[in-house]
Each structure stands twice: as structure tokens, then as C-alpha cells.
Length: 287
Image 1 (cartoon, one colour):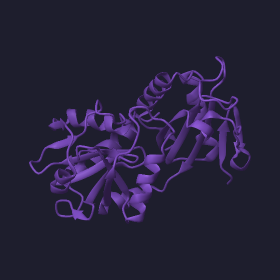
Image 2 (image 1 turned 90 degrees about the horizontal axis):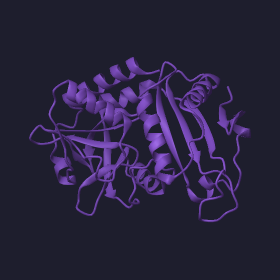
Image 3 (image 1 turned 90 degrees about the vertical axis):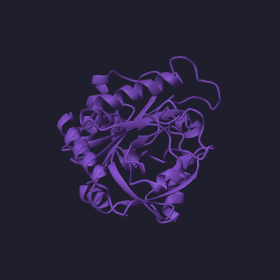
Image 4 (image 1 turned 180 degrees about the vertical axis):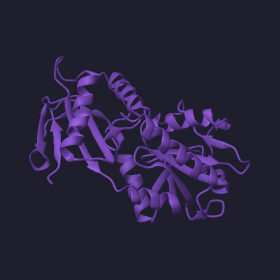
């Protein structure tokens, strides 16, 4: 079946889904995006993604293109037309089309909106969760507003490619102090050598991940102690467990960092428990 995309009010086959050559997302990476996990045709962490979308648009002074209700209809219709039951749906909003010039275009220029969807094989994610994956590190060279989910992802692309070339699944980025910020497309966590669950706080120029937020609610409900404090590469390598969170990846165990085995080299019990709790909550609350 041919995939279908939503582009500025029209559903089109992928082969015919186009934007203008002077769309500012294409020329300046002047836009934002969101990705929802999809369970049984329903959107997970729905409100969190919507709230973050509006925040990102507001921070960049891009008009919100439609009401929440209208956007929800578009997302669900895109899923329906692509027959996606389990997978992801991607939304991108840019500042629109205008003659190429760095300043914002004239007031009233309509934003561009694109939505795509694709199925994912749950078995692949479960296989990664069962055996764990490798992580590598490299310097964080991104801009100073990583709290905004912008489409300007070139440093993330380079980091993810570095991971692939080194036989790893993900790349954790490291700041000038030697502390891990986050992954190229994930938030980073460890159970440190003292048994404490740690992740970097969101005030420190990282993305407020929606999977992260839901997991933190579950951690609090379970009475698990959490320390929102950065950790170094060396601390991560000495950790009992390590994992990362993101839409699509959910809670995925990391069993090595830069070739150093984490714990006993197998997914840890806390990570496995948190993944189970997250998936149960995400499926229950999906809309």
C-alpha cells in the first residue's frame, strides 16, 4: 500500500507530497516537530506532545497552525489512511513559504504543516529490550536552545551516524565538563554505582522528553528515589544499569558505553521494570 502524507490541508501519496522550494523549514531549518508513539492506532503521551509543540512554536514565534482538536483529527486521519496500528506519527510545522531572507516573513504568512506516519515492528523493540544495545559518546556540539524541538538536527544526525559507524544503537553527547547531556534522539539515565536512579535535569539545556516525563510520574508513584543530576561518562561506565527513553524506543537498556560493559552486560532489573510500567501506562492512556 502506498503511504499517504498530509501537506498543508491535503492528503497525498508520498510520491506527490511536496513543499515549496522556499519553505523556511527547507532553507533555514525554521520549524519544529513532534513524534508520537502509536499503540493500537492510538496516540501515546498525547497531551505532553501537544503542550511541548505549542511551547516550541511559541518560543520561535511561529503561529500555531490550527486548533488542538483539528490537529488531532489530522493525526488520526493520517494514521487511518496509512493503516498504522503500531508505529509513529510525525508532525512538522515550519514558518511557511516566503522569498529567501533571514528575517521573519511578513506577518500573516501561513505556517507549513506536514504529517507522516509509519508502522514499526514491535518485535524489534522487544529484541533490543531483551538483549540491550550499545551506546557511544562524543562531544555535544549543538546550539544553546536544545529545549526547543527544532527541525535543525544536523549535530544529532552526525552523532547518530557516529553511533552507526561504531556499531552502536545510540550516541550520548558530552558537554565541556565531561557530563552527559542527552542522546542524539533520546534522554539518558543510569542506576549509578550506589544504586541511585539519575538523569540530567531539564533546566540544563536538554529536551523535556515526553517519555521521560511519563516515566518520572511512574517513578514517583512507585516510590523510587530519583536524583535529577548530571553524570559523567566515567560514572555512566561504572553504573549498575543504563538506559534511554524516547518515543518509539520507550525505555531501552544500554549494556555498553564506548565498549565498556555496564554492570553484568545485560539489561538490569530496574530498567526492565520501568519499561514494563511505561508500556502499561502508555497503552492505557493513549487516545
